[in-house]
Length: 272
Length: 239
Image 1 (cartoon, rainbow over the protein chains, first blue to last red):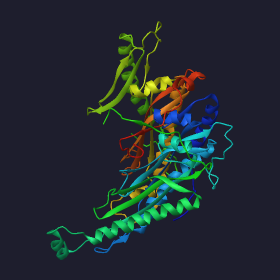
Image 2: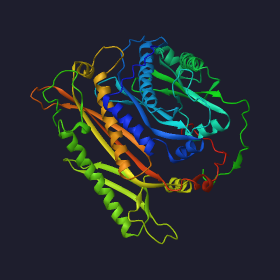
Image 3: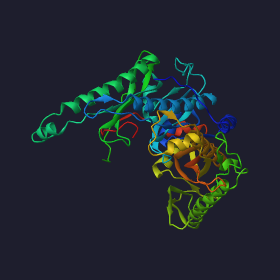
Image 4: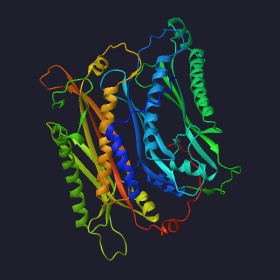
């Protein structure tokens, strides 16, 4: 996949970020945090600096697919990956301009736009945070970038309590075309209970590819592991035989050797 | 609406946004009118709350509805609350789109909601060769970022965020919690001397609550440290 850091931020954005810096000293922040997240992020020793956002409007190319064969649609895989990368890189560049240590509560979204067919906006939005001084920990990751995390404020707090720090969001994607079965086999398989090997194989293959790519990203960050992984199958606007398998999680590293947390209290909630 | 390219038809002409409205005022007019709707709805909500001797309004929902023929309804709906044992009432009740539970948590940690913040922005851009090509139904082009549209949406979002911040600052808050940011886009026929061409329009809306700190020192002690609990229900990540 192409390694794009072409983080073009419009001129007004740079002006806004600069005035945001001045605001931080006067103590105004903006954020996309919920109240729970906001209070817990403060409790964990971080100060929200401001809302950061990156976006890219992308035209997803067209690829011919075989009627009956399972295959990865590399053109589409690359598009889904590259566009997300562009959005993320722009968000990181904004956080960098604010002098942030990291970005929490990152949400990645895709919105189809009615500018034309196959055009979508890829958005990354999160809250840039800075650690209260005196912790003596370098929060930036081995690539010198602010850490990113798609964990909720609650998970972020728990992770820090247990002596782990987030390094960066890692993702892997694979757009897969599941071959059609042909009329004879469809009829034969329609009567009884049986597994449909072509579909099983396709799902396996695609998930493995997506997870493998996510893992490779974590290795590049020299992470100990990945937490909060979500494995999604997103049909987007394609036909029923084409699906994107998307794996996303937060790579973590240990901060210290012991990883004990206060014994949790058992709670019986009165709600369902 | 006219795209306001102002005679600059080159592909590199920047988008006109409500923030750069001096160049072409239609965009800033649009914003002014939408603000009028929201601000009026919120002012009436506050007036009702005042009539009830309330200290604040929690769980405010902001709804809008298209009634056709260029008529729009703006609706602000919330629950007025009153504090116990307060001898003096604040002149302006606070408003927030946060739930009562969230407001309590904030208050216990030394933060208070101040006011709902609505921020709007629009941007418009004349179609260029690249965006026209992608607008065609059956185009066979490969993967590519659409620079013009990316720029258009970035400008609109950026404008809205600057608005959000300056409107939050105007309430003398120390922070602002955004609850939603939505971008809607459309392409429409350009009314310019160059007929038969398209304009791309992006509209961004941000809603949130401005908050302020009122008990800097005591904050932590009052709320106590967070309690680690292990819920017996299953919870989806990021839920």
